Amino acid sequence: MQTREELQRQIAVATELGTVVSTMKALAAATIHQFESALGALDDYLATVELGLQVALAAGPTPPPVTHRRDGHALIAFGSDHGLCGALNRLVAEQARVVADGDAGPAPRVFAIGERIVTELEAQGLAPESRWHAPASAPAITELVEDLLPTVERVAHEVRRVVLVLPQPAGPAGRYGPTARQVLPLDAARLRRLAVAPWPSRRLPQVVGDVGAVRLSLTRALVAVDLHRAVAQTSVAVHASRLAAMQAAERNIDERLEELRRSYHQVRQAILTDELLDVVSGFETLRDR
Image 1 (tube, rainbow, N blue to C red):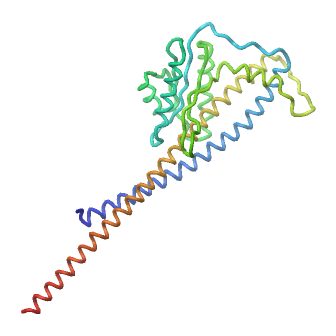
Image 2 (image 1 turned 120 degrees about the vertical axis):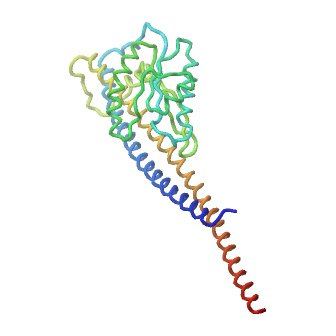
Image 3 (image 1 turned 60 degrees about the horizontal axis):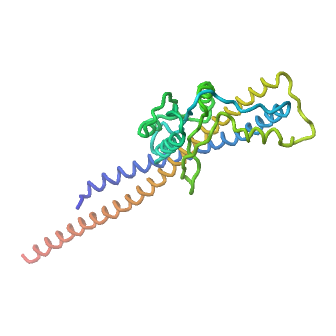
């Protein structure tokens, strides 16, 4: 049986660990709200970009989809810089492996967002040729996308398609599963849908300047929004998974503390009982004399 001093030390350690977990849980919850707000703002911006592209597409024939002479594809895997988010990075890496195996062309070119996803990708035999740190805050997303976008556009002219692999909500709150979606070339059905969509007002806008240049600029903006959304969605998933992990850890710590306190009280009661018995025994010994 553990001594009272040992139990006191364990209770103190568990209490301190519980304080750390509570702090991390509060930080994860606050960060989730930050990135969810960024996603909401991106939805509004996406609607604006799509309206502009709709005008540009209606100004002339819809351009044919871009074709590339080269084969193969590129994967951009989104994960985290730090741990404590469950199996999220591993699941994304496994999905990247599934996408790679589903393409009959040469081995994919792989890019990674987040240091932890790099290790998981390498375990799947997908060594990234470039990597970026995951943003620590919502304002840092813009800086990351500005650095990432030129690479994506360059690679898009060297391969047949560029695919994003990232986590998405799956099942109960705090549970995320991997998904894959193509970012370039743009989905032809999406462009056709925009070209024939009704305009939301009676005032029909016109394109000023070169229609091709306007289309190119808006297409680039659309890709940038897709990258923004992928980064923000991944950040929400990472911190939601971390929040779920901290909540589970908090429950386990509370249960462990309850066990330790119960054991402590039992040991303390046993010590008091022994002391009382010693006193009674001593008293009886003195009385018999």
